Image (cartoon, rainbow, N blue to C red; front, side):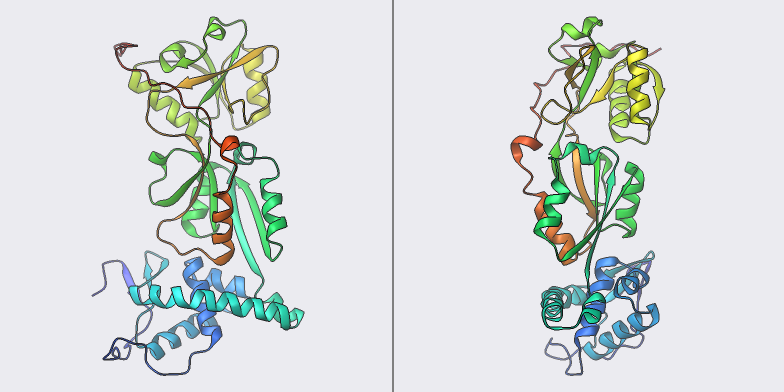
Length: 345
Protein backbone atom coordinates (compact mmCIF):
# COMPACT_ATOMS: atom_id res chain seq x y z
CA UNK A 1 0.00 0.00 0.00
CA UNK A 2 1.36 3.43 -0.93
CA UNK A 3 1.87 6.14 1.65
CA UNK A 4 -0.10 9.36 1.41
CA UNK A 5 1.44 11.79 -1.06
CA UNK A 6 3.02 9.06 -3.21
CA UNK A 7 2.10 7.82 -6.66
CA UNK A 8 3.30 4.78 -8.56
CA UNK A 9 4.08 5.26 -12.25
CA UNK A 10 3.18 1.78 -13.43
CA UNK A 11 -0.60 1.46 -13.87
CA UNK A 12 -2.04 -2.03 -13.42
CA UNK A 13 1.37 -3.63 -13.08
CA UNK A 14 1.54 -7.37 -13.66
CA UNK A 15 1.67 -9.42 -10.50
CA UNK A 16 5.04 -10.24 -8.96
CA UNK A 17 6.81 -13.42 -9.95
CA UNK A 18 5.98 -16.15 -7.47
CA UNK A 19 9.56 -16.89 -6.47
CA UNK A 20 10.68 -13.30 -5.89
CA UNK A 21 12.80 -12.84 -9.02
CA UNK A 22 12.19 -10.39 -11.83
CA UNK A 23 10.01 -11.55 -14.71
CA UNK A 24 11.56 -12.76 -17.88
CA UNK A 25 11.31 -10.13 -20.60
CA UNK A 26 13.23 -7.85 -22.88
CA UNK A 27 15.34 -5.46 -20.80
CA UNK A 28 17.89 -3.26 -22.54
CA UNK A 29 20.70 -1.03 -21.33
CA UNK A 30 18.87 2.19 -22.20
CA UNK A 31 15.99 1.31 -19.89
CA UNK A 32 18.45 0.75 -17.08
CA UNK A 33 20.30 3.96 -17.94
CA UNK A 34 17.06 5.94 -17.85
CA UNK A 35 16.01 4.41 -14.52
CA UNK A 36 19.40 5.19 -12.98
CA UNK A 37 19.32 8.78 -14.27
CA UNK A 38 15.75 9.38 -13.08
CA UNK A 39 16.57 8.02 -9.61
CA UNK A 40 19.74 10.08 -9.33
CA UNK A 41 18.14 13.32 -10.49
CA UNK A 42 14.78 12.77 -8.79
CA UNK A 43 13.02 14.01 -11.92
CA UNK A 44 12.16 12.67 -15.37
CA UNK A 45 12.63 16.15 -16.84
CA UNK A 46 16.13 16.68 -15.42
CA UNK A 47 17.21 13.14 -16.31
CA UNK A 48 15.98 13.63 -19.87
CA UNK A 49 17.92 16.90 -20.16
CA UNK A 50 21.09 15.16 -18.98
CA UNK A 51 20.70 12.36 -21.51
CA UNK A 52 19.54 14.56 -24.41
CA UNK A 53 16.26 12.68 -24.86
CA UNK A 54 12.66 13.77 -24.49
CA UNK A 55 10.92 13.46 -21.15
CA UNK A 56 8.19 11.36 -22.75
CA UNK A 57 10.68 8.85 -24.17
CA UNK A 58 12.49 8.51 -20.85
CA UNK A 59 9.39 8.14 -18.69
CA UNK A 60 7.87 5.62 -21.14
CA UNK A 61 11.05 3.52 -21.03
CA UNK A 62 10.90 3.46 -17.23
CA UNK A 63 7.19 2.50 -17.29
CA UNK A 64 7.97 -0.29 -19.76
CA UNK A 65 10.72 -1.50 -17.44
CA UNK A 66 8.24 -1.56 -14.55
CA UNK A 67 5.80 -3.63 -16.60
CA UNK A 68 8.51 -6.03 -17.74
CA UNK A 69 9.79 -6.49 -14.18
CA UNK A 70 6.29 -6.68 -12.73
CA UNK A 71 7.22 -4.21 -9.99
CA UNK A 72 6.85 -0.53 -9.19
CA UNK A 73 10.36 0.95 -9.28
CA UNK A 74 9.78 4.68 -8.75
CA UNK A 75 7.34 6.68 -6.66
CA UNK A 76 6.47 10.36 -6.98
CA UNK A 77 6.69 11.76 -3.47
CA UNK A 78 5.64 15.41 -3.37
CA UNK A 79 7.00 16.07 -6.85
CA UNK A 80 10.30 14.20 -6.34
CA UNK A 81 11.02 10.73 -7.70
CA UNK A 82 12.14 8.15 -5.15
CA UNK A 83 13.05 4.49 -5.53
CA UNK A 84 10.79 1.83 -4.09
CA UNK A 85 12.36 -1.10 -2.24
CA UNK A 86 12.36 -3.11 -5.47
CA UNK A 87 13.61 -0.09 -7.37
CA UNK A 88 16.52 0.27 -4.95
CA UNK A 89 17.47 -3.39 -5.42
CA UNK A 90 17.47 -3.01 -9.20
CA UNK A 91 19.25 0.35 -9.04
CA UNK A 92 22.09 -1.09 -6.93
CA UNK A 93 22.72 -3.75 -9.58
CA UNK A 94 22.02 -1.59 -12.62
CA UNK A 95 24.10 1.46 -11.71
CA UNK A 96 27.53 -0.23 -12.04
CA UNK A 97 26.35 -1.95 -15.24
CA UNK A 98 25.35 1.41 -16.74
CA UNK A 99 28.65 2.95 -15.63
CA UNK A 100 30.58 0.06 -17.24
CA UNK A 101 28.56 0.42 -20.44
CA UNK A 102 29.40 4.12 -20.59
CA UNK A 103 33.10 3.36 -20.22
CA UNK A 104 32.90 0.82 -23.04
CA UNK A 105 30.98 3.25 -25.23
CA UNK A 106 33.52 5.97 -24.46
CA UNK A 107 36.44 3.74 -25.33
CA UNK A 108 35.07 1.98 -28.42
CA UNK A 109 32.12 4.08 -29.58
CA UNK A 110 32.20 7.14 -31.78
CA UNK A 111 32.36 10.68 -30.45
CA UNK A 112 28.70 11.42 -31.15
CA UNK A 113 27.59 8.36 -29.20
CA UNK A 114 29.84 9.29 -26.29
CA UNK A 115 28.57 12.86 -26.17
CA UNK A 116 25.09 11.64 -25.22
CA UNK A 117 26.39 9.79 -22.14
CA UNK A 118 29.07 12.22 -20.97
CA UNK A 119 29.26 12.08 -17.18
CA UNK A 120 28.29 15.39 -15.63
CA UNK A 121 28.46 16.67 -12.05
CA UNK A 122 26.71 19.76 -10.72
CA UNK A 123 28.00 21.28 -7.47
CA UNK A 124 26.64 24.36 -5.70
CA UNK A 125 29.06 26.19 -3.42
CA UNK A 126 27.92 28.75 -0.88
CA UNK A 127 29.93 31.97 -0.81
CA UNK A 128 33.17 31.50 1.13
CA UNK A 129 33.27 27.69 1.11
CA UNK A 130 35.94 27.56 -1.60
CA UNK A 131 38.22 29.70 0.59
CA UNK A 132 37.79 27.30 3.50
CA UNK A 133 39.18 24.31 1.59
CA UNK A 134 42.80 23.58 0.64
CA UNK A 135 44.01 25.59 -2.30
CA UNK A 136 43.16 24.16 -5.73
CA UNK A 137 40.92 21.42 -4.28
CA UNK A 138 38.50 21.63 -7.21
CA UNK A 139 41.35 21.67 -9.73
CA UNK A 140 42.77 18.53 -8.12
CA UNK A 141 39.45 16.74 -8.56
CA UNK A 142 39.19 17.80 -12.19
CA UNK A 143 42.72 16.56 -12.89
CA UNK A 144 42.10 13.20 -11.23
CA UNK A 145 38.72 12.73 -12.99
CA UNK A 146 39.11 14.02 -16.55
CA UNK A 147 36.06 11.98 -17.65
CA UNK A 148 33.74 14.06 -15.43
CA UNK A 149 32.40 17.40 -16.60
CA UNK A 150 32.22 19.40 -13.35
CA UNK A 151 29.95 22.45 -13.23
CA UNK A 152 30.17 24.72 -10.18
CA UNK A 153 27.76 27.51 -9.27
CA UNK A 154 28.54 29.90 -6.40
CA UNK A 155 25.38 31.00 -4.63
CA UNK A 156 24.07 31.94 -1.19
CA UNK A 157 23.85 29.32 1.55
CA UNK A 158 20.07 29.03 1.30
CA UNK A 159 20.22 28.79 -2.49
CA UNK A 160 22.84 26.02 -2.28
CA UNK A 161 20.60 24.06 0.10
CA UNK A 162 17.57 24.62 -2.11
CA UNK A 163 19.53 23.32 -5.12
CA UNK A 164 20.52 20.16 -3.24
CA UNK A 165 16.92 19.69 -2.08
CA UNK A 166 15.48 20.06 -5.60
CA UNK A 167 18.19 18.06 -7.36
CA UNK A 168 19.52 21.06 -9.29
CA UNK A 169 22.89 20.26 -7.70
CA UNK A 170 24.18 16.74 -7.10
CA UNK A 171 26.09 17.98 -4.05
CA UNK A 172 26.16 21.35 -2.32
CA UNK A 173 28.91 22.77 -0.12
CA UNK A 174 27.79 25.15 2.62
CA UNK A 175 29.18 26.84 5.71
CA UNK A 176 26.84 25.66 8.44
CA UNK A 177 26.24 23.44 11.46
CA UNK A 178 24.24 20.18 11.66
CA UNK A 179 21.31 21.78 13.50
CA UNK A 180 20.53 23.76 10.32
CA UNK A 181 20.92 20.83 7.93
CA UNK A 182 17.92 18.64 8.69
CA UNK A 183 16.61 16.66 5.73
CA UNK A 184 20.07 16.18 4.20
CA UNK A 185 22.78 13.55 4.23
CA UNK A 186 25.88 15.49 5.25
CA UNK A 187 29.62 15.22 5.73
CA UNK A 188 31.94 17.64 7.51
CA UNK A 189 34.65 18.57 5.01
CA UNK A 190 36.43 21.41 6.84
CA UNK A 191 35.95 22.27 10.49
CA UNK A 192 36.42 26.02 10.70
CA UNK A 193 35.08 26.78 14.17
CA UNK A 194 34.32 30.44 14.94
CA UNK A 195 36.96 33.18 14.84
CA UNK A 196 36.68 36.94 15.14
CA UNK A 197 38.87 39.78 13.88
CA UNK A 198 39.39 42.26 16.73
CA UNK A 199 40.86 45.78 16.37
CA UNK A 200 44.18 46.04 18.19
CA UNK A 201 42.85 49.14 19.90
CA UNK A 202 40.08 47.11 21.57
CA UNK A 203 40.59 45.74 25.10
CA UNK A 204 39.43 42.40 23.71
CA UNK A 205 42.67 42.18 21.70
CA UNK A 206 44.42 41.32 24.97
CA UNK A 207 42.35 38.15 25.35
CA UNK A 208 43.75 34.87 24.03
CA UNK A 209 40.23 33.69 23.31
CA UNK A 210 36.77 35.19 23.51
CA UNK A 211 33.43 33.98 24.79
CA UNK A 212 30.02 35.17 23.70
CA UNK A 213 29.78 37.20 26.93
CA UNK A 214 32.79 39.29 25.88
CA UNK A 215 30.78 40.60 22.93
CA UNK A 216 28.06 42.36 24.91
CA UNK A 217 27.77 45.90 23.54
CA UNK A 218 30.68 45.43 21.14
CA UNK A 219 30.36 46.88 17.60
CA UNK A 220 30.00 44.03 15.09
CA UNK A 221 29.65 43.75 11.31
CA UNK A 222 28.32 40.48 9.92
CA UNK A 223 26.76 38.81 6.88
CA UNK A 224 23.12 38.83 7.97
CA UNK A 225 20.34 36.40 8.80
CA UNK A 226 20.68 34.23 5.68
CA UNK A 227 24.24 33.35 6.69
CA UNK A 228 24.31 30.35 9.04
CA UNK A 229 27.27 31.62 11.08
CA UNK A 230 25.39 34.87 11.71
CA UNK A 231 22.34 32.82 12.66
CA UNK A 232 24.32 30.65 15.09
CA UNK A 233 25.94 33.78 16.56
CA UNK A 234 22.65 35.62 17.10
CA UNK A 235 20.96 32.58 18.65
CA UNK A 236 23.91 32.03 21.01
CA UNK A 237 23.82 35.70 22.06
CA UNK A 238 20.08 35.55 22.71
CA UNK A 239 20.47 32.39 24.75
CA UNK A 240 23.22 34.01 26.85
CA UNK A 241 21.35 37.30 27.25
CA UNK A 242 24.10 39.15 25.37
CA UNK A 243 23.48 42.04 22.96
CA UNK A 244 26.34 42.94 20.61
CA UNK A 245 25.94 46.18 18.71
CA UNK A 246 25.43 44.92 15.14
CA UNK A 247 26.02 48.09 13.16
CA UNK A 248 25.72 46.57 9.70
CA UNK A 249 24.89 43.35 7.83
CA UNK A 250 25.96 42.84 4.23
CA UNK A 251 26.63 39.99 1.80
CA UNK A 252 29.49 41.98 0.23
CA UNK A 253 32.69 40.72 1.87
CA UNK A 254 34.80 43.70 0.78
CA UNK A 255 32.23 46.19 2.07
CA UNK A 256 32.01 44.26 5.34
CA UNK A 257 35.77 44.49 5.96
CA UNK A 258 35.96 48.16 4.98
CA UNK A 259 33.06 49.06 7.27
CA UNK A 260 34.49 47.07 10.17
CA UNK A 261 37.84 48.81 9.82
CA UNK A 262 36.28 52.26 9.56
CA UNK A 263 34.06 51.66 12.59
CA UNK A 264 36.65 49.71 14.64
CA UNK A 265 34.17 46.83 14.72
CA UNK A 266 34.57 43.09 15.08
CA UNK A 267 33.82 40.65 12.23
CA UNK A 268 34.11 36.93 11.59
CA UNK A 269 37.10 35.34 9.89
CA UNK A 270 38.59 31.97 9.04
CA UNK A 271 40.98 30.30 11.53
CA UNK A 272 44.70 30.99 11.06
CA UNK A 273 45.35 27.67 9.30
CA UNK A 274 42.85 28.67 6.60
CA UNK A 275 42.46 32.43 6.27
CA UNK A 276 44.82 35.19 5.38
CA UNK A 277 46.88 36.71 8.22
CA UNK A 278 45.28 39.56 10.15
CA UNK A 279 46.39 43.04 9.21
CA UNK A 280 48.55 45.12 11.55
CA UNK A 281 45.37 46.89 12.66
CA UNK A 282 43.62 43.78 14.02
CA UNK A 283 44.16 40.37 15.60
CA UNK A 284 42.33 37.08 15.11
CA UNK A 285 40.82 35.44 18.18
CA UNK A 286 38.88 32.16 18.62
CA UNK A 287 35.31 32.65 19.79
CA UNK A 288 33.49 30.15 22.01
CA UNK A 289 29.76 30.53 21.36
CA UNK A 290 28.93 28.10 24.14
CA UNK A 291 27.08 25.68 21.86
CA UNK A 292 27.85 22.07 20.93
CA UNK A 293 27.34 22.61 17.19
CA UNK A 294 30.45 22.12 15.04
CA UNK A 295 30.61 24.91 12.49
CA UNK A 296 32.39 24.27 9.24
CA UNK A 297 32.07 23.50 5.55
CA UNK A 298 29.66 20.62 4.96
CA UNK A 299 28.92 18.60 1.85
CA UNK A 300 25.18 17.91 1.65
CA UNK A 301 22.85 15.93 -0.56
CA UNK A 302 19.15 15.16 -0.45
CA UNK A 303 18.59 12.65 2.34
CA UNK A 304 18.36 9.07 1.10
CA UNK A 305 18.85 10.09 -2.54
CA UNK A 306 21.18 7.91 -4.62
CA UNK A 307 24.34 9.60 -5.88
CA UNK A 308 25.43 9.29 -9.48
CA UNK A 309 28.86 7.79 -10.17
CA UNK A 310 30.45 11.25 -10.67
CA UNK A 311 28.80 12.60 -7.49
CA UNK A 312 29.93 9.56 -5.52
CA UNK A 313 33.48 10.08 -6.78
CA UNK A 314 33.36 13.74 -5.66
CA UNK A 315 31.92 12.80 -2.25
CA UNK A 316 34.73 10.30 -1.70
CA UNK A 317 37.26 12.85 -2.91
CA UNK A 318 36.04 15.34 -0.30
CA UNK A 319 36.69 12.72 2.39
CA UNK A 320 40.41 12.95 1.57
CA UNK A 321 40.81 16.65 2.37
CA UNK A 322 44.02 16.91 4.41
CA UNK A 323 43.00 16.65 8.11
CA UNK A 324 45.68 19.05 9.37
CA UNK A 325 44.45 21.66 6.91
CA UNK A 326 40.79 20.99 7.48
CA UNK A 327 40.34 20.96 11.24
CA UNK A 328 40.38 23.95 13.53
CA UNK A 329 41.62 23.53 17.12
CA UNK A 330 38.85 22.86 19.63
CA UNK A 331 38.25 25.39 22.39
CA UNK A 332 37.83 24.42 26.03
CA UNK A 333 34.20 24.62 27.07
CA UNK A 334 32.91 27.42 29.24
CA UNK A 335 30.03 26.99 31.67
CA UNK A 336 27.20 29.14 32.95
CA UNK A 337 29.14 29.46 36.21
CA UNK A 338 32.01 31.10 34.31
CA UNK A 339 29.66 33.74 32.93
CA UNK A 340 26.32 34.19 34.75
CA UNK A 341 23.47 34.92 32.35
CA UNK A 342 22.38 38.53 32.17
CA UNK A 343 18.68 39.18 32.74
CA UNK A 344 16.77 40.29 29.65
CA UNK A 345 15.01 43.62 29.70
